[in-house]
Amino acid sequence: MAGEYTIGIDLGTTYSCLAYINEDGETVVEKNFEQEETTPSVILFNENGEIIVGSPAKDMAIMYPPERIVTAIKRQIGTDYEVDVDGDKYTPITLSAAILRKMINDFNDNHGCEIKKAVITCPAYFGQTERDATKAAGKVAGLEDVTIINEPTAAAISFGLGSGTDSKKRVLVYDLGGGTFDVTILEIDGTSFTAVATDGERLLGGKDWDAAITKIIKQKVCEDNGIDQDELDADDDVRQTLVLDSETIKKRLSTAESTKGTLTAAGKKAVYSISRSEFEIATAPLMQTTLEIIDRTLATKEFTIKDIDEVILVGGSSRMPQVKDGICKKYPEADVKIYDPDQSVAKGAAIFSKSYSWDGSTAAAVAAAAATGTEYVPEEGEILVHNVLSKSFGIKAMYDDGEEKISNIIFRNEVLPIVAIKTYYPVDDGQTSIKVEIYEDSASNNDGGNKTELIDGYGVGDFEMELPEGVTRSTPIMVKFTATDEGILVACVDCLNQHTEYQLQNRLQMSDSDIEESQGLMEKVTNAN
Ligand code: AMP
View 1 (tube, rainbow, N blue to C red):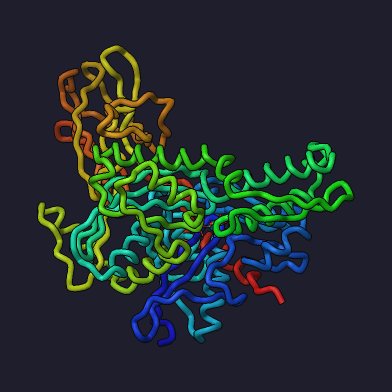
View 2 (tube, rainbow, N blue to C red):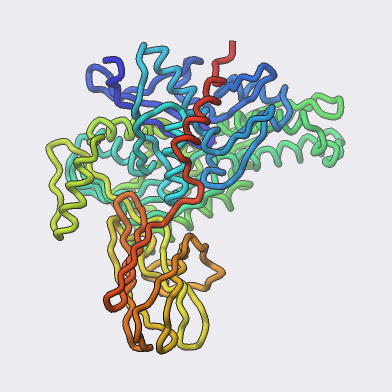
C-alpha cells in the first residue's frame, strides 16, 4: 500500500493530528513517534541546529530562550511574521511545514512509505491568503498534492458519515480549539455538505482559558505566601512553568471538581488549590463571547436554534464542562453532542481525501454544471463540499454625497461559487480611465452591508482600465465578480466594447523556487533522542 495512503491532517493552533484510511477501510488516527494521537504544534530550535516538534519541544521549552520556541504559529499564517534562528529565516509557512513534516516523517517511518498527497484542514474563516499559505506549507513539507477543506466541514463529514444516516439535517458545529474559535452552520444531505454560515473569533481558544488559570494561580500564590505579584511576573521560570501547569490544571478541572498544584517562586514552594466553580466564574466572559457568536451566526441566516437539528461540539476545549452546560442552559431546546473533539477534524479530512478526485475532474464537472445553471450529481459515496465566502468583496465607489465608500458586490456567507454583477457610472463626461480598487470587509448582506466605510475594509488589489471614447456620466460600467469554489476572486469590467479581467493576486504566494529552497530547511526536522 506504500504511497497509496489517503491522509487527512488537522493542522491545529495548539495540537495537530493525522488520520488515514487503513487497509480495512477504517479511519484511524496515526500515533506519532512519541506514541501520542495528537502532536503539540510546538517547535523548538535546539543548539545542534535541529528542529524538534511536538511534546519533546513543549517539554524542553522551559530550558530554552523564548526566541528558540515557536507556539501557535497558525495565528500568524497569512501574515509577514518572520523568525530568524541561527541565520535562517522562517515564515509561518515554513514553521507550519515543520509541524507537518514531523507528522509525515513519523507516518512514513511507521508504514515504510512516502506519502505525497494529503487533505489539510483550516478554519472556515481563513481567506484565500491563509488557504494558499496552508497549501504552500504542505508543499514545503514535501507533499506534491494538497487540498484544503474547512475544519467544521471535516468534523461534519466525520460526524455525518459516522452516524450512518443519510437523511437531510442542519447542524451547527461549535469548534473551540486551542487558539481559535468558530461556529459554522452546515446542511448535510447524504454525502453533500454545504456550509451556509460561518463566523468566529481568530484569537479565542483554550489558551485564553489557560491564561485565566494562570491569573488565579498567581493571585493565590501571592496572597497566601506574601509574594509581590510584580516579582512573580518578572520571573521567566515561573512564567514558563505556569504556561504548562495552567493547561494541565485546566484539563484536570474538566473531570475533577477541584485540584491542587505547586509553584516554586521567590524561593518558596507554594501549594494552591483551584475549584471548577472558581475557574468557571473567571472564564464566564469568554464562554459568553462564544454564545454571542452562535447568536450572530444564526442571525446571518435568520435562523433560531430551533432551525438546527444538532449542535456538534468539537475542538479540545469543548471538553470543558462549562461549554456543554453553557450551551444547554442558553438553548434548552438544542440537541447538543460532544463528538470526538480532538480527532473528528483529522478523521473527516481523511474520509474526504478518500473520495476526492485528485485529478480535478469533479471540480471541473461541478463548475461546468454551475455554468449551465444545473447541479452536479455526485457519484455513489462521493463527498461534495460547498463552502461559503469568508469575506465580503467590493470596490471603492463615489456616492452621490461625494463620499467614497466600499460598494460590496459579493458577500460573506454566500455559498460558493458566486457570480454577481453591479453597475456603476463614470464620475465625469469624457472620462478616459477608471481605477478599480478591490476591498475585502466583514459586512453581511442581510444587515445593510451594501456600503462599508473604507476604514472598515482592507485593500486587496487594484487595476486601471481605459474607458472607450465618448463615455458620459450615464454610460454603464458593469463590474462582475466571480468567486470560484476555492474562493478565488476574478473581477471583470465591461464598458461599451471594452473588457478587462483581473484575478486577485496573493502578495504572499510562494514561487516553486521559494518552495524548493524552503524544503531544504525541512532536513533539520528530527525527533528528539
Ligand atoms: P485543539 O486545537 O482542538 O486540538 O484543542 C486544543 C485545546 O484543547 C488546548 O487548549 C487544550 O488545552 C484543550 N483541551 C484538551 N483536552 C482538554 C480537556 N480535557 N479539558 C479542557 N481543555 C482541553
